[in-house]
Length: 362
Image 1 (cartoon, one colour):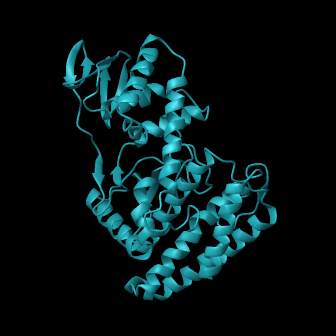
Image 2 (image 1 turned 45 degrees about the vertical axis):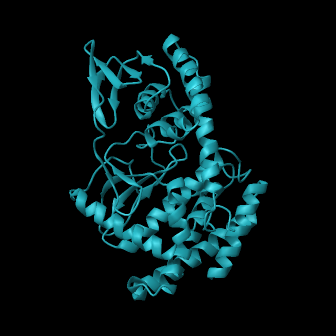
Image 3 (image 1 turned 30 degrees about the vertical axis):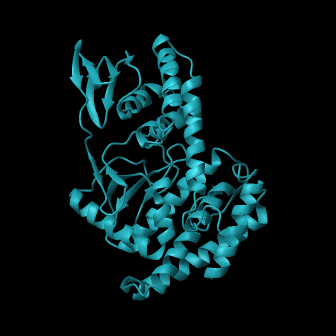
């Protein structure tokens, strides 16, 4: 078994981490201080969770989890964004609830709601003092063959904050390509992952739920993820399906490590020690190198799996060049980590398994 890398069949490690992070998000919501409406909501939600523990799963929804974790990180007040989205997901509650604070967005739709009533007969908005039905979710499509959605709505409050020198935020854009082109390209990329990393693909619902399009780039590929938004990936469309598959594995691996980082330091000097990065043109904290290695060692396993399966795309000369390039980069990343890391026990386990898997691939 490799820790948070390529799982064994049926492995639940990442799913357990995701549940623990949902509990942190719940703690953020239940411990927040506020007015009578919030206190009433907290009491109601506590009773709802006791009667229906599965309600906790709803806190993992991208529209709920990201705002709560941003708030937990001390980066802003976002309960008013998360709570209506959470309540809209709850079906047939055991008792009624009136959430009487205004909000402007729900399910990807613009609204001017004065509040929301959650009852056994359904959920209603309050608009101009009158009940109004919940809008149907907008701007979302499920990628064929997966449970992952392509979504034109971005609810991560940090998505325009950018650390990469080649990008300026993550504005939502289809890049003047139809949704059908995006879905077809993503389905093809996920099929490559299913062939090359079958157990990783099977585990994917635990750490990849939403893709946000940020344009079309025919020459290069750009993608992003955030510690405060595990399960969400921002990415450009690219004509090469292998490039798209690499990006999906790469960013979803970040989600795994980001989940762990809420529960464990991983590297005690991960943010204090800065170094050159084998995959970025700028100086990076050591945790950035760990994120790179953790992302690209499984990408190397994807290459190996496609080659072993005899996939036609793996027969191309450019594929073999890229395969070796990733292996060489991973070797440099691991050398930096082995030289400088002050790892926690979980971080050391991760480093050991990274080295073992890389050694087998190289």
